[in-house]
Length: 121
Image 1 (cartoon, rainbow, N blue to C red):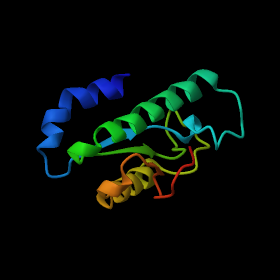
Image 2 (tube, rainbow, N blue to C red):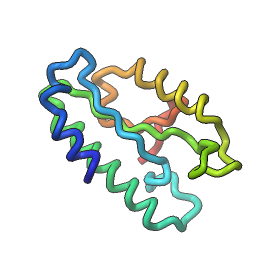
Image 3 (cartoon, rainbow, N blue to C red):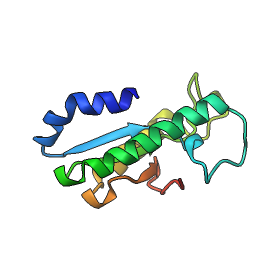
Image 4 (cartoon, helix red, strand yellow):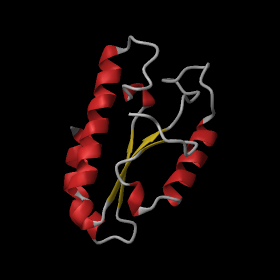
C-alpha cells in the first residue's frame, strides 16, 4: 500500500504540475497472464497487488487528468536481479525514461515494460 500512500501524499502537487504523471515501478512477475514459471508466491502476489492498486488509482484520477502508469524495469543485472539478468542498469533506465517521456493521458492505467511493450495483465 506504500505506493498508494505516496500518491495520496503528493496528489495535490501532482495535480498542479505540468506532467501530471505518477509512475510506479513494478514487475511483470505480478502479471497473471504472463505467469509461466510459477513459484515466487510472495513476490508475485505483492506485485500483483500494487498493479491492481495503481490500475484502480488511474481510474479514480481520470477526472483530474492525472496519468498513472505501471513500469516494469526488465530483468536487470543487479544484486537483486543477479548476474544472469538480461539487461544492464543503463539499458533499463534509458528505456524507462523513453517510455515516460512518450506517455500521453490515454496511457493511464497501462502496464509497460522498459522497452515500451505492453505487459499483459
